[in-house]
Length: 90
Image 1 (tube, rainbow, N blue to C red):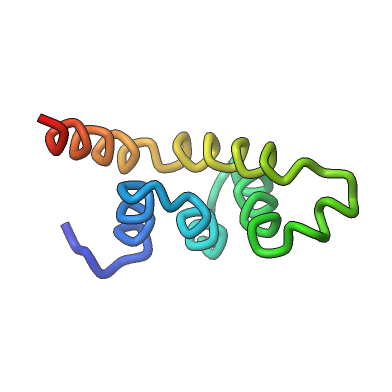
Image 2: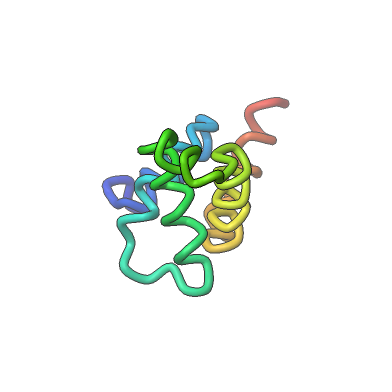
């Protein structure tokens, strides 16, 4: 598996629980399917939280929803991260 791709960077961020970075990287993908709006909004909220607070949005909720969408959109990568973390804990 290539380790110099954007998807590999997302997996690394997931592994490190660096969800802000994972969201920002994923938001640059052209095709996010049904999760497009949620992931992009969460990434934007990470980058500009004061703007979303001014709009009356809960930034933490936007991030949480974005993370769930990220896990669903990149389900195979998320499962591989979970498996790798399980192996590390043993």
